[in-house]
Amino acid sequence: MTERQRTIALFSVLIAAGCVAPFVLYPTFLMKLLCFALFACAFNLLLGFAGLLSFGHAAFFGGSAYITGYLCRDLGLSPELGLLAGAAFGGVLGALFGMLAIRREGIYFAMITLGLAQLVYFVALQMPFTGGEDGMQGIPRGKLFGVVDLNDNIAMYFFVFAVFLAGFWLIHRTIHSPFGQILKAIRDNEPRAISLGYDVARFKLLAFVISASLAGLAGSMKSLVFQLASLADVHWHTSGQVVLMTLLGGLGTILGPVAGAFTIVSLENLLADKVGSWVTVIMGAIFVVCVLLFRRGVVGEIGALFGKKPAAKHSSH
Image (cartoon, rainbow, N blue to C red; front, side, top):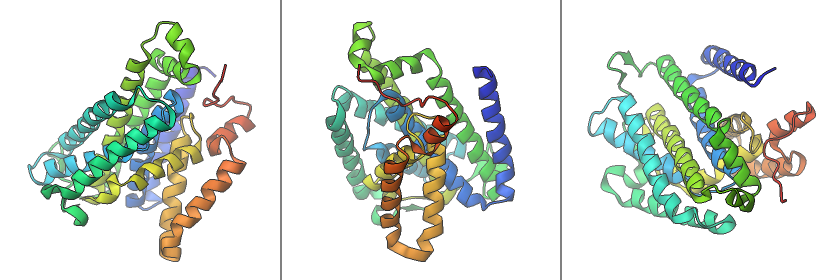
């Protein structure tokens, strides 16, 4: 099967499953799943394919949620413009973060992104329009292109699904482009990429901006779905959660973050009412077990089982 045929098959299965899903499962749960799946896919582009571990992605996710909420609720913008503005805000913030952090590596890069994200958290806590600890409530879903009423859950679901597909396609296209191949080369052996004449810092920064924009788009969608933007969206815990989703599903795989998001969101919904605050402990235990038993993540292990070489295998030579 050629690459083109595999891509067509992948998107055909995704579209078919997505069209059937809201008539089988609760649409609001599915919308939350799609928002976090896009968030995890955006993060995976940075970590799985560029080799950059960011602990600050909640800043883009939550910051864009607040921007979209403010524009739609207080300025009366339509939902599609609110989403575009949220994605643009994520990209601009990503460019600022990237310019400050991109020349550092490893734990230093991660700590810089975490520190910058905490600044965004405290800004969100103090700014009057965010609602502080109460969050920004009453964000209207509005009408898509002035015609489709997004207060209808099914209509809102298909809008979110379409946005997810667009974001997923962009990530897929990026990974399989010459730019994506250069990112993998930088991830596997940065000195060799530099010796070949590539401007490594510029490629890393561009990957960071694309990842931040799509993370912002995911956060903007979530704010419209739940009509709420809260401090939880910009908290470091959300950054940790997306790392967990990506590693659990399969780092450096196309569908891994989607599988990881599905697992985490499902478990949270399933366990929240039964075990309360213990859900965090259970999640931690599941993560430890998966890291020990499924080193390449769920999708990575399935790929290895069927003889496909995992995409995220790092080389030290």
